Length: 564
Image 1 (cartoon, rainbow, N blue to C red):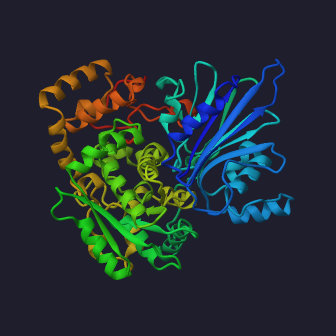
Image 2: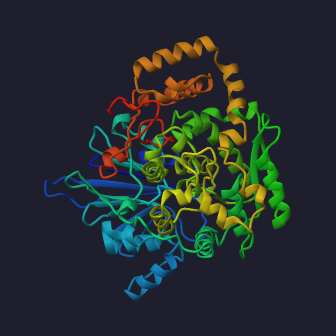
Image 3: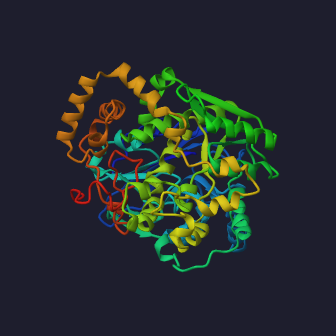
């Protein structure tokens, strides 16, 4: 992933210095180049001047030898900060050229730039991929920004006390620039925004809403047809210019690895990670099995207590989250990304999106009412940008690796959510529940049955990282200290759900470190209810506990406190 920052202000003094300081925080995301461009925006009718700065830390994956971003149109009117990749950029480029556009590069960034120049806030409708961008129109003093439909690429924003509009790929960028935690928002997935520097007006457009595309009662297509669609989706994610790796754990990532290994650009290696607490790792067994079947080297990483001690604060900083499971699985993800980097890869293709789309999270039906399952599956999908995608992006970008969750595809998701929930999750309400039933049918004949039929085990369980983390926590905090911190923190914030439910020292330690690293976020309230997806203020609310989807019908808290 690249990293982007943007600042729009009436004060020109120190603007470049501020922008470069913000961009320095993102150097890990874009090790290939870091550059800032300043611009004078249109003078308002009130006589005020407006100034802008866009910075990009680049990880070169497409058009590797291309010019250093940020890029501008030939007339200098539009300038872009972009990260991600557009799968259909070649088709868009052909269309733009036929309309008279001229290009200086062969990559996707300039295609997005011209698309926004032509279509303004309607541009995201034309883009297929994982992306976030900021485009400024210097003639009109307008800023356009957007985030992909699944929130794979992050983008945060705020208007601070000085009435400055600030955007960035991480929360750290905004917090170091006079932004209060209460002002901080994530641009929601599937949204674009338009900011008018002359008036300070901020407008939002929800350009993608999966609920509007669901057609209940749709008949399931033949499995062979679904398999072909899924394989095409996975093939789109394969980088054409740089080496990449795949991660192997369960059925999701194993199927991705198998499909990629049969392509004209197979992965350079297969990666899996375990811990010193995991004595019988199924993930390691699967990696070695696929390595032999696919003829691709398997690299096995080991996380021990010292690795956690060394990287704990770093992971919390990258995630900007006090969510315990987000942090411990983030530590495992960081190790995988480091191994990919050591292998010479610039991208990792993961099994991300499979659980969200095919129905793989058992907490949806074990912790919540059965009559809420279908709605909660949609909640999980619509919050992927503050759930799995947030974690994958944060920890891989920390070492200059781009995460590409293989399963996300809006057309495929719309089809799957149009099918009866009982076809995706068979046996709901019984003792024999088969999660991801359609994906298992797709995988038959392409994966060993022992991988297909294995019960899903979350990463924090399959690697035993929670047990290992508790040992680390015991070295850093006594139970008495943990109890005292937990009591005071819950008193400060009555909605500290993760602390109220925690029985170990680990979640308390994570919360303590988070509040020390992000003191301005300590009082943020964690909502109980799902957001209002049509309200970007609610949908994009940053609550300091990113990593868990907010759902309805919780069995233990049916009369939960109202969201505040």
